[in-house]
Length: 229
Ligand code: CA
Image (cartoon, rainbow, N blue to C red; front, top):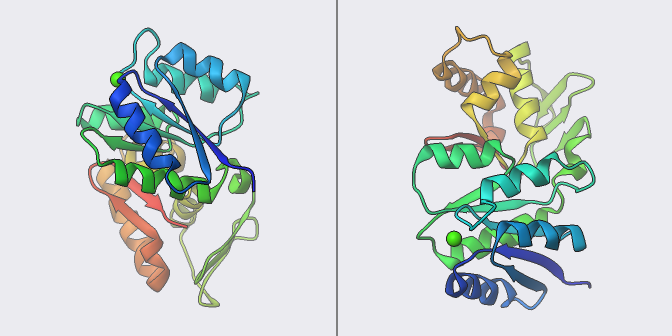
């Protein structure tokens, strides 16, 4: 089995070293450390890693900029990015997710927790793999978005158009945090009269209809929602 390759982008060497040790402990992953944003872009250009742990506060080219550049390049596949944010402010986290980060951990963080998230993301594999598929098959939930057919435990579920689109967007972005604003933009299409609160109302209705499968839609406090696969 080839080893997973993780790129750690962090200028604080002691923190980077701890993360590397923890990630490599299981023996199936190699972690490589770079200390700046430009070195990160060069490292990705040389060889695309399986996952990037990206600090927000970096010299010269910051973490958000690295994220934005990587996501804007069509020749770079969708590598999962877990962002480390020193600031606990919601704005920073939202900005990170909007710039294309898949997940974030707020400093000071537990290395164990970060490593668990890294391992979970590596297990899931590249996010783009399932993104284009129009179907989803879970333990209880099955969805054929092309045929507009949703079922839980084999029983068809009737959704409104909005609920259907909500579910589709969440599933297409499974295992990633989707902010309320993003949902408003993608599902409601910038109908500015709609308040973010109404996203919660619709998610509530969707959960009711999904019954046992509704556990897959997780609330991320202060941010939005995540469909857990
Ligand atoms: Ca830093």
